[in-house]
Image (cartoon, rainbow, N blue to C red; front, side, top):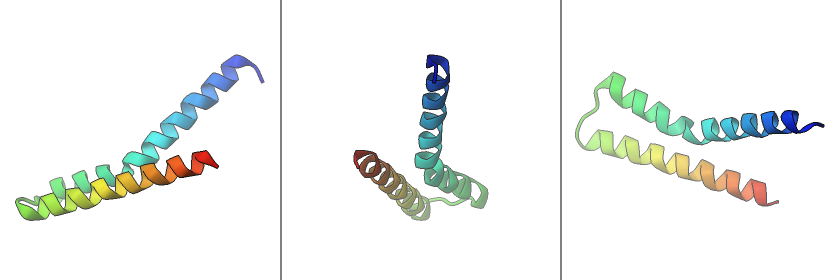
Length: 66
């Protein structure tokens, strides 16, 4: 495998990981925007999205260790 192909695969893999990690947060932000959530409800939903993002990041980190 030549170097250019390896670099391309590394870049595509990194983009895939970023998309996987950020998906819950983006879904929560769109949901809050479209449904017009304000006040405490928006903070709770955003907190859940942040925790889901953190969970995915930890899960990917443990998976890469093995």
